Image 1 (cartoon, rainbow, N blue to C red):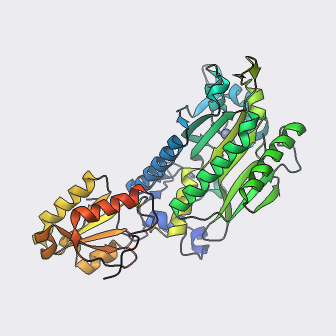
Image 2 (cartoon, rainbow, N blue to C red):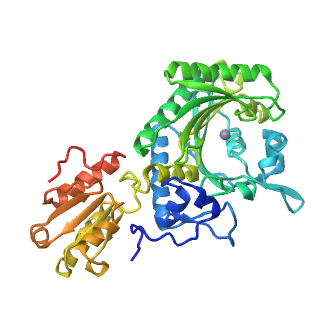
Length: 432
Ligand SMILES: [Zn+2]
């Protein structure tokens, strides 16, 4: 039986860096303690693997994102994590970003690299079919792998990794559509943060700084900066300009979050790019029958899955919103006599798509089992009265205890809260 919901002892020895962390919610420590993810020197630094409970969190997050994107008119694609060096020479990554890329591999006389971003693949996919202005804005999304050759000294937990799963999308659109698309992306970010129970620390307009890592096209930088400024001003969000934080191909809006130790990082971004459409010679046929160049809006709602989960762990200390929780409901039979009813309830939960565990008396006293399951949003206690009446007495993670109620009512209510991606455990329920 999986022990996923049990807050086990932290078995890995803490590194000196971890010991130095004074914060309670260090995602590295908690992530291991909660059996969410881990690393192994044999796999390598910066290459964490996801344990079943971490994979459940990640699936919930990925399903949320894909569903939100589908509703917002995005189409999903898959593209390979490798590409020829030439692809990145065209995109500009090779000239401006190669310090962060893994060295190329020689295969049958060709140089192939692990991709440092998804944009070039999506530009090529767009280019593979002719497009009419009627198809725009064309929103292409992928939760895909990318790689960064981080130095081993800076690697840690899920925040600095060498293999990254990015929630990415590229919107190919006309110049007139850019502001509205960027605005809509900001709204998707706002809604996602609400569902995740996280807060943006600040919004940043990231502009180029001194140094040569940016593509030289002053007019394009000016136009894209003006567009993003307009979007931010219209949204009414407070923001600050940050020099030296732009992508090499254009400025961006960065949504900043702060971790348990007070360190700020970028989770979500919206970017306007005139550079790659030109480099890949992207076109659409306008209403006038002539060929026009689209603009690319790059956007990420939750950034990389790794960083998003790290932030969720630190923000919630493992007590995730119910829709993300690895185990959503634990069934607790008071004694062995209620075990068949407990198993039947667990099956009903599983049929409803809930992530459920049963913790019977073999795991210890009821009090001990409740304590072990303290991060599980819903604890269903089944005593003799509940078993006889097809009732369930729910305890909520926040300490509330609900009166016994029909099982079908309780499960329907939980299912509805989870489907709504609510951060509420019960709504207006009262303590009994
Ligand atoms: Zn991109």
